[in-house]
Image (cartoon, rainbow, N blue to C red):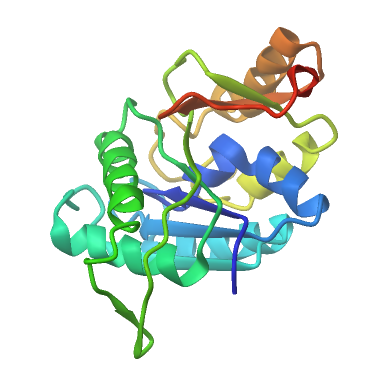
Length: 238
């Protein structure tokens, strides 16, 4: 299966929190979208890897993505080395996405910055034909995405691109709330974390509203770019 967009996150819920509105919009536009989680989030203070596996599936169903896979890297301890790069390269070559969305270039959680650079490097290396990979018993051909965009997470980074997600904020919030173990739950007896407060859950909406304000729409999501984006017409800029 060929994908139009592959969204990659260090942990299950990274993608939903950061770019679920963009994914939902493009799926509604007929694009094929997939999600790749690098870890199972097993070091998380709340819940468990098994619970998050189920939550990730529920969130994927809500968004309507074509595929969701998990590479099972060690939460907190994966590295940007050849072994990890090759695993991501195999997925990129298997699904041949035109666009890859990945972790913020700089963020509070150390896995986000690591995941960002690891994914970026893997996207470049995936285009080198002399790197040989085999996936499901078949030799793969080189493939490099046309664009690698980094979504914005905890830190308020300055976006290079802002995507209008008006009409899709409810889907985004519903996908985020699929991770019931991680976010605010008045009946939960688990330890409090920076993302389990009501403020954090509400921030999913008000941050989207603020980005929307910048471009004159109701809600939006922001991304940073690795290279200068191009448009066919100046009228493509809204």
